[in-house]
Image (tube, rainbow, N blue to C red; front, side, top):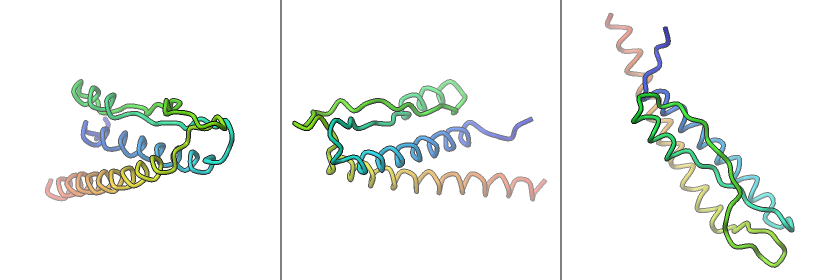
Length: 114
């Protein structure tokens, strides 16, 4: 019988999605000067919200091509957008990691008291 709660599943899904987003942003930045490269975007928040509401919390992130305007060289990577997205993602990852640590600390404490 798994001991995973909806909260733990949701936090793990969030960490997985944010990790994929960080890798995708890094790939976008690495290709900022690659003609024809189309930036990617990672989405999972809406699906995660629905999954939590349904009592699961487990979702997989999806990756899709960015619909941002394309430059004359065919690329649509915007370094400013990627940089801001990276800062936002790092902060969200740190918050989710702290929340997961708190959740696991509570589980450990519960086992010690039984």
